Length: 270
Image 1: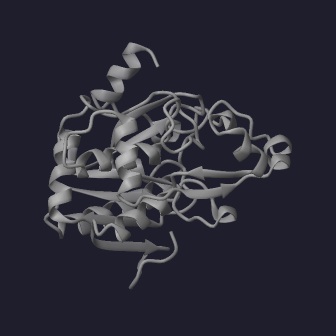
Image 2: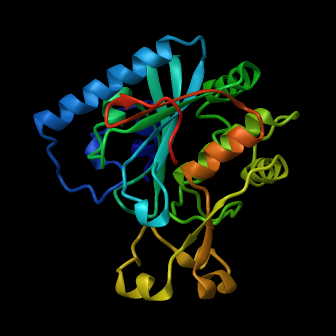
């Protein structure tokens, strides 16, 4: 990413939502999809306004991961009274299907306008002390961002060569939880693992990798050891593994989820 684009990302320039994370072909969302995104954004904003929290975790369904047993494909930190708006999502996005990424700030409508599979969402509120510490770390951005610009969709958890959107979330949360300031990725992930974080395992058979056309700029299997590639069982930080970690470690204060526009009485599979 050149210096201009890096500056644009961190001055919170809002790219067209449909351009983030795909191959950057020009896409025009229909009025109906924009209306659905706006409706979801209003739903999320109303729920966020009901609780006195500086930050929460918000998840969406951008890709159909049902074959891997997953629901939510992407998440970000939604920050109260951000310079860009009352509720702004700060998250890592792959740049146009390339091997690069950037950190972006988007309004809720943009966040839910990214040509999603559906408009399901889940919001997780953190325990107050954790929320305050995380909000403090996010206020330092772009300093101490723990962002690594080389992107890999199946980045090896704890690896130094690549990063994906979910790994960035875990590392940022760990940097806020740790008793001492953490300003490097390796230390942050090591703390998360010691604190109980366990990545998911995603099975990608060799035939799928070769015949399924999975050799793309934003997927690099060589980030994983040979033994992993031979078995096809890849450890990956998923949104589900983040939810599981927050619950098991006792960092979750409250959860609300909407499926098909309806508020769920209890959260469904993640």
